[in-house]
Image (tube, rainbow, N blue to C red; front, top):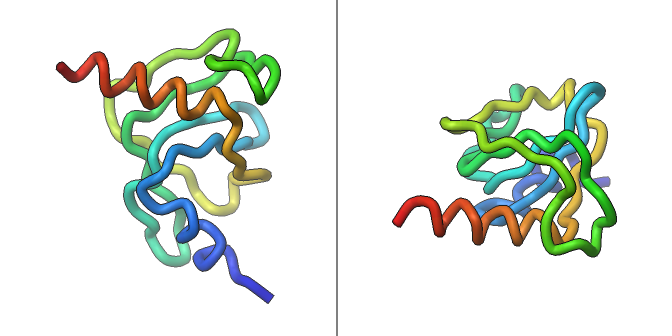
Length: 95
């Protein structure tokens, strides 16, 4: 059986979407803090996802810093198409 750190490690330096009880977040998994949670760089709060195959989520807000999500708050981690679109947008804004 795979543990949560092994599972999340598959996404290291990749964009993900993380479903939590109240919000969905997206960003690059930049650090895994053992027994505590995940640090996302280029983080976004997603208010409406839309279809997972859409290029961008319906409604989103950029978070102006890295974000930390506790393992206990995570319900689901996945890679919809729109999380890659958000990362293109984030890279374009850093020029």
